[in-house]
Amino acid sequence: MAVIAFIGLGNMGRPMAANQVRAGNEVRGFDVVPQIAEAAAADGVNVVGSIAEAVERADAVVTMVPKGDHAREAYLGEGGILEHADPSTLLIDSSTIDVQTAQDLHDAAAEKGFRFVDAPVSGGISGAAAGTLTFMVGGAEDAVEAAKSIIEPMSGNIIPTGGATSGQAAKICNNMMLFICLQACAEGAVLARKLGLDAKVFHDIAKVSSGNSWALQTWYPVPGVIDTAAANNSFAATFRTDLARKDVGLALSGAEQVGVRLPAAELVAGQLQQVIDDGDADLDCSVIIRNIDPQAPG
Ligand code: NAD
Image (cartoon, rainbow, N blue to C red; front, side):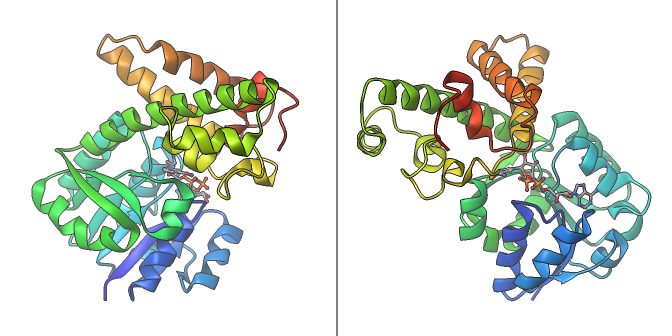
């Protein structure tokens, strides 16, 4: 049995922590929003009131927070992980954050003698609940190797990506592709409806045809077609629009740094930004279908 400090118990962190409990590990959970933390107690997480309490004598820390600034706060802030954890504790950041912040966390952790990996995930909340997430793990070889046994109960695939920050680089590229596919699904769904096709019939066709994608199978933005769609639930977030906008923004910043233009990613960033500007940043990103058809059901 391992003792795991889980920091960030939101849409993803809570089911991931629950899988650690199921695997027989002791999980001490902390979230800056007390109600979110307390909800995880129902899954057998030992909810504590500070990072200091969570990391005490922990074998590993897993962080699952929204953005780079939150990760900086959790690791480097006053009362944070690097201040309170023992340097023997393995540090695993599974948040999706910018490469520069990931590098700064690697550097700060190494300076204090910690092993640290950037280990972002793919698979959505359904993958988090099922324990089938794909982990992209960057860092020193010994740290990546040690992280595997901690990550295992939460994962379907653990893929070492290379040195520090390479996990984040892989994740940023993957998610850019995901959100472009989501935009394609939204446009396909609207056109199919306007052409008089039954939504389920069209989805059944696309699923076994060349229009297939993970977004189509998991997030298809039309109610009553697939169980996991946020459209079934008035677009209550499984993946918030502001986080999706962040991810496409990370891809665009990376592209700028290396002198590449990404026209489809630019378009999708604009579509997600429109949802945010309309005041719906907290809704699920699949609500972008309403940019195309304001009457889209859901
Ligand atoms: P979320 O907002 O639902 O959960 C994040 C939680 O972190 C919140 O409950 C927040 O209160 C907490 N938090 C913020 N700062 C903290 C701190 N300093 N200490 C402790 N807790 C803190 O977000 P989410 O959907 O769970 O996503 C988390 C990360 O995973 C993001 O980087 C996101 O891009 C990535 N991600 C999300 C999905 C998805 O489908 N939702 C899939 C893959 C990756």
